[in-house]
Length: 402
Image 1 (cartoon, rainbow, N blue to C red):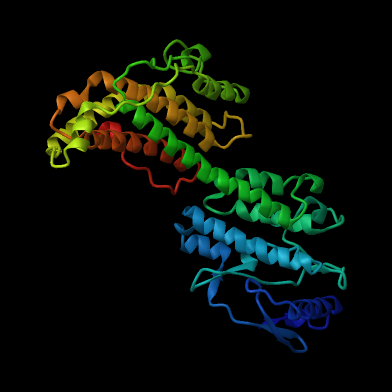
Image 2 (cartoon, rainbow, N blue to C red):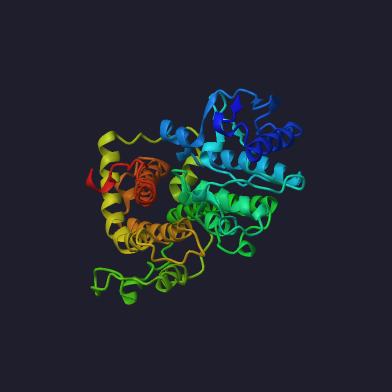
């Protein structure tokens, strides 16, 4: 039950607002909008929602929005219901965490409180919440769908994982309405490439690891180690004391990583061990012992450490200090850096000739230990960046101090 306070029950403005809210909400039907049931003289009834508002939900469930899947699901449902309102010529004008309910079962979005909404029938809007109100709303200017889009951006800022929507938030909360997304549909379309890019980046990294793996299997040594160009840029501890990297210097760092030229790869030739195994299915190799796995991991990490110090740490430092080109996400920078740094790592690993050290062990078993170590190192630095933007992110143990 939503009821007017006693002192407001004879105020025609609030009586009219209550009538407006009921008449507007009663004709609507959407799974993520609280359903209006009936109205009395000074009250109205809506369906009961067993849950809590978004503000309380974030406090009581701090880990929920650490999941990108959960955050995307929440945003999708919120945009779906706000888009529905706009299709019915209704601008909510009071979107805020307190007016977004999250159900206890299923964690579904339920939008509530149409008391301040703007419609073709009721154009008078009585109030707002300044923290989420767009500039044109605060100044008494003309409001439209873009006013709600501004509030959506402000709501996203309250999520623990807000950093993953930085570009979307910036576009939503532009001061000039013409610089925002012009509709919910446009905002939804803009999010689709973001999701595609998210998976594409990991796909590219995976392909990079496959390519590196195949390269590592080659007996030919025709590819030089990637040259160390970073010191020339004045960002490393070797050769420079300048740690103030300006924003427009970050792209060349990445460019230097991705522009290294290598000789053409020759077709991969299976090693004699692989040929022997394929030609004789009964041939078997012994398993690596735990001590041998630790030895291989220790060797791998000792090689990764100086490479990552030189190639990854400067980029992580740039990202943490905000000194990078925001036209690209920081995951783009890290993904490119990881692929090239790992090529360097594996080039150095070849010199160790671990296959020769363990001739009676399947090469795949040795490589598996190597790539797990590389993955742990990569995960550590990625989580270090995530922890900076979201302190609630748990940092994994440092593999280099094991």
